[in-house]
Amino acid sequence: MVNRIVIALLAILFTGQVFAVTQIQATVDRNPVMQGEYFVLNVTADADLNAGLLDTSPLLKDFVVGRTSVGRSTQIVNFDATKETRWQVLLSAKNAGTVTIPSFTMEGVKSNPINLTVAKAGSQPQQMRNLFVEGELSTNEAYVGQLITYKVKLFLAAELQRGVISAPEIAGAEIKQIGEDKDGVEVVDGRRFRVIERMYSIIADTAGTLAIKGAGFSGDILVEAPRRGGMFGFNESRPMQAKAENTQVIINPIPDVYQGDWLVSDLLIAKEVWPEEQGNEFEIGTPITRTINVIASNANSNSLPDIKIDMPDGLKSYPEKPVRQTVVRENQVIAQYSLTSAIVPTKPGEFTLPEITIPWWNPHLRQQQYATIPARTVTITGTVAAAPIPTIAANETTNQNAGIWPWLTLLFATLWLITLALWINARGKKHIIAATERPANTQVKPAADLNKIAQACDNNDVTLVIALLQQFYSAQLAKSMTLSDIAHLSKPLSAAIHQLQQAKYSQSTSSIDKNMLLKAIEQTDINQQQNTSSPLSSLNP
Image (cartoon, rainbow, N blue to C red; front, side, top):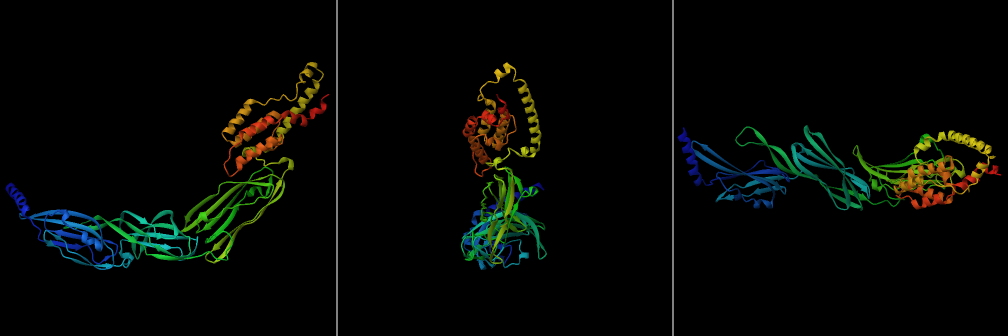
């Protein structure tokens, strides 16, 4: 038994040197094939040959040559050894029609040529293909600046190994992907397909005919291939490419009858968010938060206009930076513009917020329409003296606790009456009289409080600065002081507080004028305010 094995091995070693190719055979895995779709060319030689002997350059004229793999095998039957070299070449036909795969020559032996029938791309029924791409436009006619959606759907009946979807090619328009890819399942004529969906937005900037080259796919899929000489198959990676059909859209110019800033949308809605729990009546210095929302269907958020509102004298507006966003909901592109403003009343009376009107073009009705927010009348209560400038509480907690001030006022009044009685009782005592003869203008401002205010200015913390100012002057004057009361102490303080409010509520970022505020505090004589307002001055001898 051992002798037979040795003899067989020696036979292989010595006879392998004289093996020469006698036959070369070329076959394809299918015929006809689809234009642009890969198929497999198999070239088999009955000898052990160098892998570089197969020259595929003649194929480049009519085909895209893909990956090439080489395999070798040896079979021994009754001491008769045969060898084989196999090449597998992936090809994709460039044009439809009848194409000839030429013969290949290796060591003087030629393979057979193959006449290949190439069907036009897309001619094969979709349910018969393992992979195909569809493109869908939202409309075939639009206006300059109108948003058009282009939906790409990749149908897969095989396992996707890797791949990429290419965007449609368009000249004279802006195109970008919107939203995220969707992965789902659809049944086409009874066959189940995995579907990958992607959406693009297209906005043309010139009138005319807009040509769109369909989106495409390029990648690898796993297909089942029969195992040579066996009854079981295996999966192999095969490159695939597909392309959606080309299409075009007619782009109309802006109509001559349109007036205003050009805006085209399927539907436009404008609405406001108002503090309804407060109604339309507010006090001087109470901020009113108002939000204007503009929502458009199938429009770009950048095309929505900026809202500018002229406020009547007596109302100050501090708008925030507007917010723009675009989302996809139920295959509709929704654009939104949002503007929030803080409106501060500075005078009592009735004021009317003007009507807001936004013109837009309806492409379905082919006419101009308007989105409107009606005018609103508000009533401002309070006295003129209470609000020479916008008065805003330091924070919400102060507003919510306003009901405690009457009790604090009563407490301070009681303490003041007790102090008055003690003062009158002590008038007859000479040492007390001597002590009360100190000059009235020697009021000292606590340095610690001023340092806290200066530090808050350095940190640009407007809310803290306002709170510290109220604490400072409430302690100095022995009574509760609002921001409006402090502003009445002097003109420099009034100007400094106005600058603080601008820094807090202005749309543009600004810093606190520290030097201006501290100088205003130093220039304000608190004792003079006490002397002019104190009822004790009439009791002095």
